[in-house]
Length: 145
Figure (cartoon, rainbow, N blue to C red):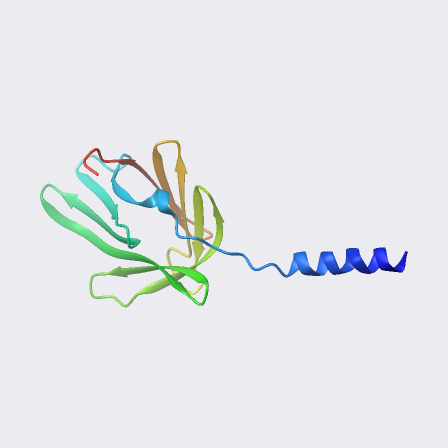
């Protein structure tokens, strides 16, 4: 009887100490165009095989917003690095992941503190938020990938 109790206690202890392993989301790769923009702007996100991303918004033919993104690994952990023009990188740590979604967080950043990307059928969705406010992004894949 003691052996059985010891076995289950050991099994429980080992299962609680499992390290979460995050993997780079291959479903994110490609060229995406935002479908829920206001009518005078067009927003794009391009993700390449190196998990480097470029997000930008055009108004007419002028670039009104641009940011560079990278999914990087450091000591078996994944981070989303976001860099705006003339800014230093902001790092968001992966906190959740499924086969079609991931969530990253940085509580020290004013906005956003949390970013969630997920695939919903053929739509790429992203939500950026803090505890008081959120912005939704819906993208469809561009045909010329």
